[in-house]
Length: 261
Length: 313
Image (tube, rainbow over all chains, first blue to last red; front, top):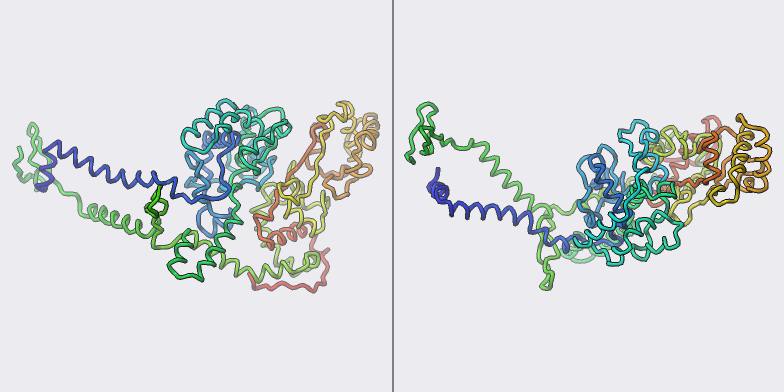
């Protein structure tokens, strides 16, 4: 044992100081970058916070452990992009707490599942997966269709997220409980008002085929149908391509900077 | 305490600590572990430089740190875009041939059929089989694609349009059709709905109550105006998304419960639009594939002027 080591080990104050220094190096390297995450995540047009109904769906997704078998991250690999669409962007999970990237696919990736199946398919598949897809390993979630959502609880979640820094406006928080119902009730007079708060792209319809109730199935399908649809990836890809082509004619140093963006 | 001595059994030095006669060996960490630790450390450092890793200050104004170290290896995003561009370049010749060819001619070309069927099957399995079934025979709620019944235009161009823009989809050019809920919107009474159920069962050759069916026939042709979409006598074939009710093919089921639900609450099946998700040539291949699936090979005419390069893929 070295002399220095022996000195440190025998002098408790020095030992405590050294431990503090070593531990904080690890801490700084791991934690410090997170403080800049608001500035360094590249913004993408189209991203918005979850509507109350979608958030309820997301909470169910987490509650039921869907992430254990489904990833929500299309990797930057040719095979992934070819099959699932544009690779996932960091900004696309900026309102996910926690993110649902996942590291294992027993079922397919769901990052861009929105719009690829009909609501009815989703409802039936969630109720009895093997009736729709032969040989599927997925468990059934029929009880979602029998369980009403709790709008007050969702409103509290929205409030908590606003407190945590998500850009929910005060109006969104105030209307959250009603918005959760509105999004699944197209027949309501003020159903369309949800678009004023969350944008024109919000899908308003009776997702679970049972107009009498707003169930967890409504929430789940609303969430699934919205996944990956917020960012116009076609326009994004075209924009990046144009940028790159413009950069090629400029000096090399500049080109690298633009392409990296 | 603190006098190091060599342990006689193991031959190692002790730490010099002693508690009630118990001493501690001062065995050094095995060399491989030390090296492993140092190498891991080095790898981490190299990765740190090679990959995007650390926020960087980029301006003198708040919030100062808005950029990050891009890494020496370049971005994966760029790499995958390049590979996709290469792939597209490889496919271009093939795609162009398909995009330029006339679908109606291609569908009668046995050579094209032989060549394109496997590709269509792969596309079908990935994108369509979930709803329409691996054998394309459909399932409750999702139409059979290999029978001779078409809700919409069943020619290859019609199938192409349906795949491209969908049915009741969120695309502007979608084809739209809806079976209204006649009980829901109070245009028929419960009894009338039951009568129509019996009538539909009668025209589709199923067991039924003749008297109720007779009353249902009147509702079908007059009060409910069902024949407006389903054709006179429910024979369908108008290409507006309303099925033929006189055959044995059912989308939602021909039993009393399913029929009652269809008439009372309505139906509105959705087919997503694929124009944003698939390449033009892929949509065309799918349309051909589905048309060919429902057409026995010998019915395909032998003559055709269109040829597809067999090497391009």
